[in-house]
Image (tube, rainbow, N blue to C red; front, side, top):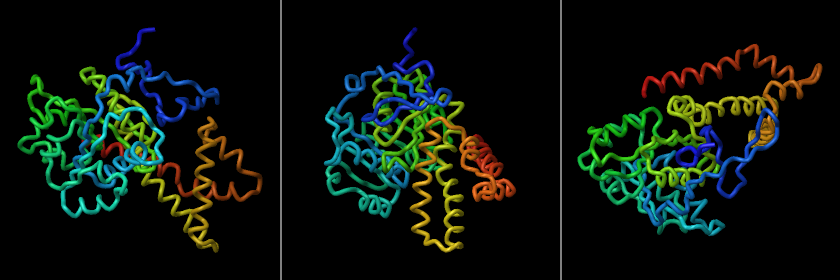
Length: 338
């Protein structure tokens, strides 16, 4: 079998878990585990060490990735012994107030690793080897059109965490001349807020053939250290963005509904939350074993039981179709912005 470029398996939509865990996933069709091919881009050999990672925009999402990466690789409790490709960080926020808020979220043991600045976009790009775009998507054009950006990003790796704008769009915003030799190397990675706790599901767009292997490797290194990674083609990135990003917010609505019902029936909200969270963990384990959601519902529903009553109430309200419509509308909106 021919080895695909970048050492990725033929089906690049594979799941890569935390680097300290075994690389296997549940196969729903067999309910067995299958070994994932090890990424053969020998990351420790091809990634330069001692690089600086700069964040352009470091709000909720950028801060989650930054803190997740610091906690997983630079904390005193970290057991990682391999050389780190990134050893210094710069976080550039839009305002001084945002910079001050971010500073309060950085652990004391990490303070010497990071410089936090505000309104210094070009300078941050100049001082960084790798840049993560974490600003609001609608701000991308203004940020990337600043004088000096093209020169500061020449031939550098730029990782976009922006929902909407494509890699080609961002590349042209940085450097409108597609034939020039100083084009940046733009990749797209969409994490979620679980990154702060090492539990992100990050979608990485299948890299273009022109992206150097070392840049693919370091992108993967960053996001594997804040959770799991899945590669998808550009045609699937929009929907995946809605699923891994927006859905985290969407699912808080039914959770709050469960809590409200419990309070109405006499539970303290904190007690109800404890039970609901463990129930979600259990459901996740059941689904990861390969069981279909419908089969799970059927197995729990007993004749004349309370479970079927809760399900009938939700089906009567059209809850399932509401969630489906939410995904469709979110994807439609995002497609219009791309």
